[in-house]
Length: 227
Ligand SMILES: *[C@@H]1O[C@H](CO)[C@@H](O)[C@H](O)[C@H]1NC(C)=O
Image 1: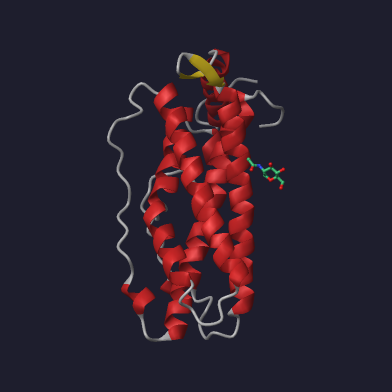
Image 2: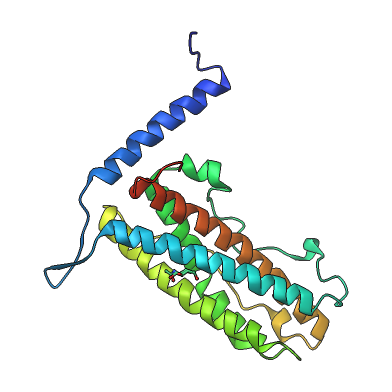
């Protein structure tokens, strides 16, 4: 059978080949992050940790989201998606695992970093203000605090991988602006709850994406099967 590039399947094949080639290069370089002239962590271990942490974060955010949704189920219009606009919507990042697998590792690392960094200020606001909601369960507050710390830590980890691996790693990167929403300060309790709900739903989607990116990377770098 002759392969023609006008056939969609041939394009996929080409992408896969290109992709494997890229990953082969990554996996064959001996990485070691240096501190005080000592090798303190191999890059493979950093990818392993970043993948595992981002997966755990994604699970914890989902749990927080479900808990919030159940707790405030009676709030009118809670799930009205038309009210939600995520501040990260405009980021040029892969949408799903298929796209992530066909993305250069450098772009994938930067996508993960952009999303994590974009959530730093919003999470500070969230943790500071969510406790002002009436009857908010303590478990939600403690999850939010924990998630904030973990996201900061993965963000730093991914940043050091980028600085280690990419020549232009410290180039200026643009992060979407976050302005503390006036709705958080609303006197209307239901409106505040809807804002928090929308925000947590955005966080949930974004953490799932970061989980995918970092685990696609982990899978290729550690040369696992079935990436
Ligand atoms: C992720 O969660 C699992 C299961 O709770 C735990 O064993 C593992 O240590 C966690 N990974 C990290 C990096 O925290």
